[in-house]
Length: 91
Image (cartoon, rainbow, N blue to C red; front, side, top):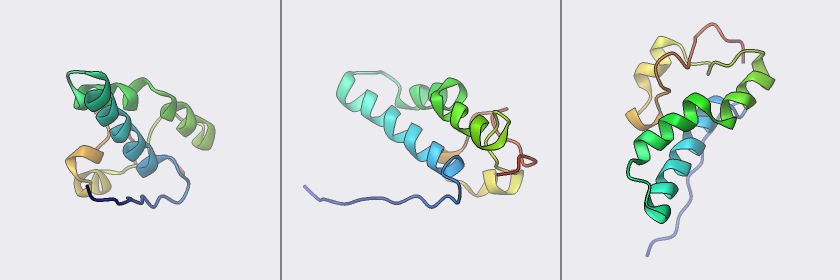
């Protein structure tokens, strides 16, 4: 087995970090606990999970701060669910 780490750089620890944390949580649920859809679990975390509370505390809004260009550049697995991001959020 290979050992390794991954690092996500996000200036305030809420947007890209939230996408990475929820992706990892969904993957763990699928691999270790038999959840059928890692992608489905990930999207539920991103829409309704505690990461949204973190965003609210940091910005005063429950939206991730990704504009259209940023969302287009994200890998598919890191894209926020529809309606969960706004480019006008001050981070």
